[in-house]
Length: 372
Image (cartoon, one colour):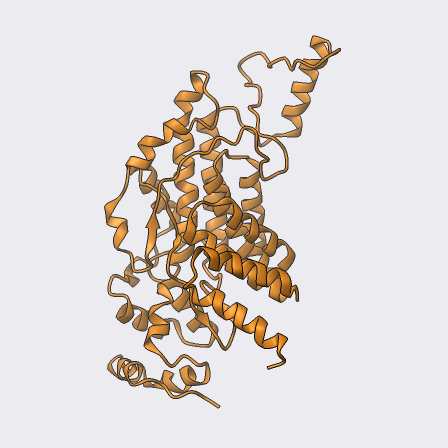
């Protein structure tokens, strides 16, 4: 049986001349205005498109629910936004803080994954936040180049102050509640990196290779080991400016491919970006989060679960962590792993107890367990 629509939502649809959506909304249990407003611009678009609402109607409804929503910026490319952010030293933004409700009838929520990492104002606000974290991380890596040239480590966290101070106050008013937080470079010289190795600087092509001091090893053997390490890690770059440029290019390519639904290509580009081993946990978390979306679209729920869990554990951004735990829970449910799904949902709720999407995941698990 369909649920009756509340009067406030009915009046809004009449005002926008969208009364034709009322039967569809009722059949999909979208009967409260508060449910729509809690989604945020991106999630609203994804869920409505999923249930068959046209783009034109979605834009009209989004513009009414989110006054700062601007459909005219739909054709701006994410690469232009990245360049502008780098030029101004803008601080990165994490994933949208409050887009935590999903369509209960379909089990889709928080983002729906379409146009995942671009977050243009008219449709995809969620993922640009994650991608902006990647771009700002690249800017921070560039700032670290001067310190690196003076003999500092690649993960010179003190060089990030200039990037963190480049806060763009104009970004605070977006309707999705995207939080601006410092994007500090984290010294992970002794921690595992995404590829499973330990971060280290490769020998520069314009200086003598560093001799590895190992007992009973000759200097020739040590030099040969350094050369072999360089060959085995072709994407590891000693020059920080080149590293930043390569990382930004790969991230931008992946974002565009994901926005255009080229999920396999986007997944490959995100993987190459991770192989650069950027010493920044937030940048890597954003890449894992976006790659999880690609894997989900490609039907690889195991990889989606693994990447989403990695992103949730890696980031210090509470909003991104909650969204990543939700994605992990959804992937686990798709795999039939109820225990993993429940653990992921509880991990996200520990950060944000009010998250509606994660509460509904738990409710779904418990109702299935009771045979409801």
